[in-house]
Image (tube, rainbow, N blue to C red):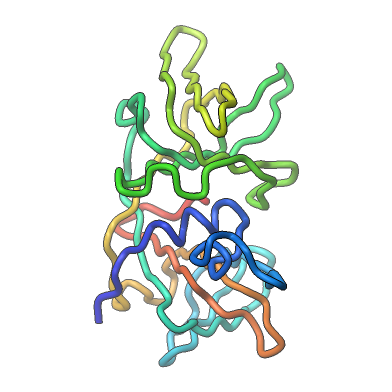
Length: 208
């Protein structure tokens, strides 16, 4: 069974915004608790995915109605062009400014969705910025991308070795034991319910 790629859900997840709220105009009476699960697949049994998390636990995840599965494909710094819409996880550097931890280049149809910058749980004190690339600069000191969102501009350096990826199609057959996954979902009384699952393919892992 092939799951369709719906990057807008991932964009909302990368902004720390509830998926249901995003679809309905970012408003809800009560916002559910969003959770992210990162790790490797242990088993897929029907509508339940078991993940060995990076925290050393086994987390069972059930799929929400209309859940979305996507993969990631390798990209490069040279692929980032002015006008592209990107999601960049970063954190402050010792020399000032922000340094990228990963870069996700969104498909053109997603431009503007979930725009902004918020705290992120990839690493301690990290943030996620979904924004449009204003300019990309390469020089002897490294690489810096200037992004713009809500009338603001932010410069983020991209060190050598920073993962750069884009979204790709995926199928349930990719959720094999050992596959690396990123799950964006909600914590409910019954457990974690996934709205979006991103799985690594062909040696490329979800860096978010």
